[in-house]
Each structure stands twice: as structure tokens, then as C-alpha cells.
Amino acid sequence: MLIVDAFKAWGHVFSPPLRRIFWKSLGLTIALLLVAWLALARTAQWLLDGVGLLQPYPWLEATAVFLAGAGLFIGIAFVIPPVSALVAGFFLDDAAEVVERDGFPQDAPGRPLPVGQAILYGARFAGLSLLVNLVALSLIFVPVVNVVAFFGANAYLLGREYFEMAAGRFRPMAEAAAMRRRHPGAVLAAGMLLAGLLAIPFANLLTPVFGIALMVHLHKRLSLRDPVPLPASPAPEILPPAGPGRA
Image (cartoon, rainbow, N blue to C red; front, top):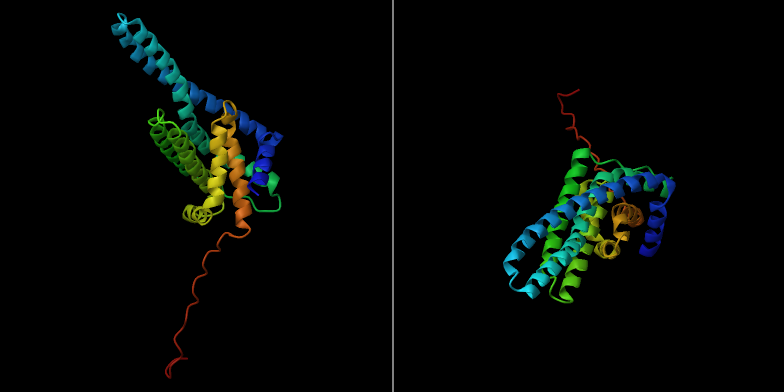
């Protein structure tokens, strides 16, 4: 069933109604990655300024230059997840509304998150993603473990955050988190799809819009057997029985 959700989500990504949002999210993603690239390049240049001390040892100087260049590309690869998370927070409601309207026209649309709350969740998502990927980056020279750490941590984090943001349009955020805990396998499997997409150059730029569309479909499917709880009705007021002196 998740594969069906993924194919439907891909269809939304390239559909005319979502194309404008896609280009806006792509532009913001590229702009943020450019800022990250410049910051990493400045750091690499600062490190290379010390290479002059290695001039008496040409092989060490060449090694340092190579490592600095490789570090730029490795660093930008680990920056893509938090950038994707931040962009998702900006475009969540616009993209989710399109997917809900086109994919589920018979259902009532979700409620947009307040702007401040959406930005807060996006910033929290980006911060957690940056922390997780810094830990994964520290394992870069540990074969197998580094790959497992990158995919495992990102699959869990992407699944959790994207799902809760999509479900939060229909449920209180506490209930969205509770629903995610009731369906850990489905949410983690969706997160693994997103983590795999992040590992594909250029295709990873699609992650924000695709992730939102995928989680909208997943939430709708899971809601068929885990519906939105109705608010509790107030208890009826019980009046005391009329006594002898009461009319």
C-alpha cells in the first residue's frame, strides 16, 4: 500500500496545481544550499590557509587540498536533510491543501497550521535533522556503520516529522504524535523512502514537496482505521430532585 501512496505522491509533484509550489520550494532549497556551500567553502579556505605550513612537505599539502575539496561535497550532502526540513515547514500547508483537494475531493480539507507554529515546527525539524546528520557525519570513516546511521536516523526523523505535520492539519498535534506511535512501521517505511530519495543527487531536491504529498496520502489511508477522534461531549448537568419545599 505504501508503494501506491508513493506513486500517487509522485503524480502530485509534477501536476500543474503543485508545479508552482514545487518551483518555489526548489528555488528556496537551492538558495539555502548555496548559502551552506559558501559557508563550507569559507571554512575550507580557512583550513587551507594553514596549508602553507606544509609547503616543505608537498605530499601533505596535496593531501590537505584533496581532503578540503572532498569535505565540501560530503558536507553539502549532510546539509541537504536539514535544508529540506526547513523548506517543508514553509510550504507544508500550501502543498498539503493541493494534495488533499486533488486526491481526496470528497473529504473536508485540513486546517492550516498557524504561521508561527508552522515555522516553529520547520525550525525544530531542521535543528533535529542537523544534529542527527552531524552525528552521522562523525561516523564517516566507520564503514557500514556510517551508512546505517545516516539512513536509519534520517528515516526515523523524516517519517516522524513529515507525518506529524501532515496529520496536524486534521488532529491536535498531541494526537498526531500519538497516531504516529500507533503506526510505527508504516511511518518508518515512508521515512525510509524519503531517506533513500535524499541519497540521490538532484532528485533529493524534490524531497520537501514529495514528502508532504506522501504523508498526506499515508495519513488519509491510516485514518480509515484510525479516524480522527471526536471531541468529548460535555457531561449533562444533573439537577437535584425536587424536594418537598421546591416547585
